[in-house]
Each structure stands twice: as structure tokens, then as C-alpha cells.
Image 1 (tube, rainbow, N blue to C red):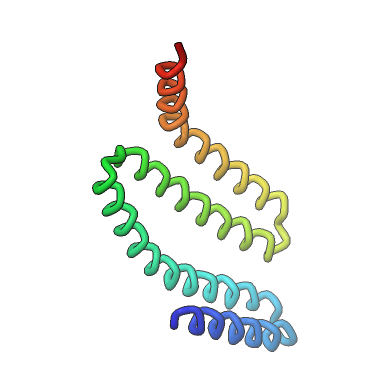
Image 2: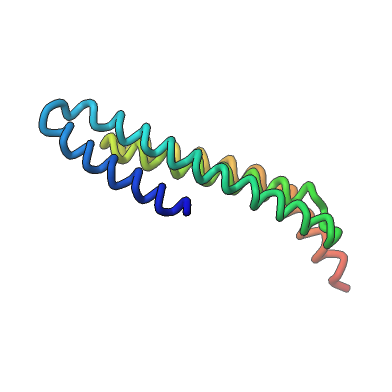
Length: 128
């Protein structure tokens, strides 16, 4: 199971970080980043199956695939932004983390405009 691998990588990374901090604390963050990237790519591999399933369901339900693509992009941006924010927080750079978080939110809002405008158009058509 992948969760066992992910948990194992996390535990091993924490043990290595704890040992390294005693001798060269500046190298501990590198271990943390590398472990995070490895876990991210393990999870990313699982996401491809989910994306394929969503695309299949979208085609069966006759849903506009453009909206689904936008939602998948938004989800990806949210994951990447959160990953970057956590790295910044681990480095003690909370101000930079806040800026990355804000940037991710602005991009998500700008990507969601077509969906919001379509929703408003649908509501206006329904109202008498």
C-alpha cells in the first residue's frame, strides 16, 4: 500500500532530520524538502488515475469538459501552493508563505471566473 510507503518516508525523514539537526542544522531542511518532493510525486501518480476517472464520468454525464479542466487546474494550484507554503513555514519564512498563499488564491479566483460567469448566466436565464 502506498500509504505505508508515504508514512515510512515521513518517519525516516523525521529521524534523519533529528540526527542532522544535532550536527548541521542547515542541512535538515534539504532532507525535509527532498522527502516532501518524493511524497508529492508518489501522491501525484495516484492523481492521474483520479483525473482519468473524472474525465470518464464527465464524458458520460455530458458535462462541459472545460469546466472540469478548470476545476482540476484549480485543485492542482491549491496543492502546489500549499506545498510551497509549508516549505516556507518550515524555513521560518511566514511572510513569504503568506505571499505564496495569496498568489495561489488570486490565481484560483482568476481561473474560476469563467465558471462563475456561466453560473450567473444560468441563474439569469432561469429567473423570470
